[in-house]
Length: 263
Image 1 (cartoon, one colour):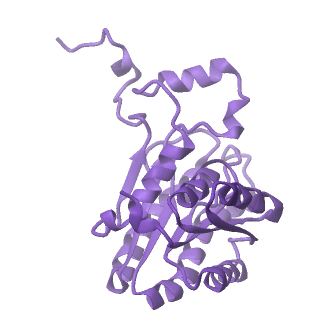
Image 2 (cartoon, one colour):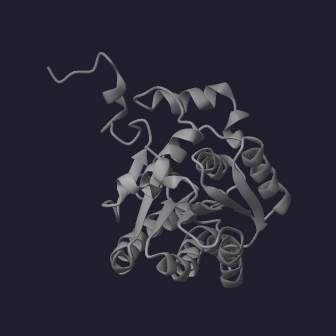
């Protein structure tokens, strides 16, 4: 299914950890040539080495994608290494918690800059290189929090993630004329290294709220990104693909009770 991704040039921002690491490795396994971007070069290069050890092509690159220079630098590096740019996975994001009454302007701006501003800047930086190819794929990592749900302490995070989808819809219209599609994946409860060490009781409460009764895997988010980047998805643009095990479906918690019925 993903044979069209063989040899494609891919940038993954925030590509060294969690979902980003899964996306980087997924494209590497599909035969794409991956530039793993992180603020930390050693962490980016570690994921790139994993891809190379598995027989793929990858390189690490350090950049602050909340800045214009950082985004221009990573695109220039992808073009230098791989002769162009076909796919951008705008995945970089942070999720610190702060209640609204305690949140500082600096905390709010840091989340918006890292999550939303970077989506705009990386997309803008990628367009020229993609236009030269006559095609392109941009995949944004959003979240259920913000676009669909809310959670105390994540007002800034939710706003940034909802903003990404607003940006996506207009970007999809503007860039369609160049053969560039713009889509998003919306992860639900995904098991990452950051969650693995949390108490079992806490993790169990989350699992209980998911109809499929388990956490998702980073590989499952990667598979969604791979599809949206493939030729099979050439007629899909402006779409947000939920990968959440049905987490956002229940109207009430009791809908997940097997004994619940209206009859």
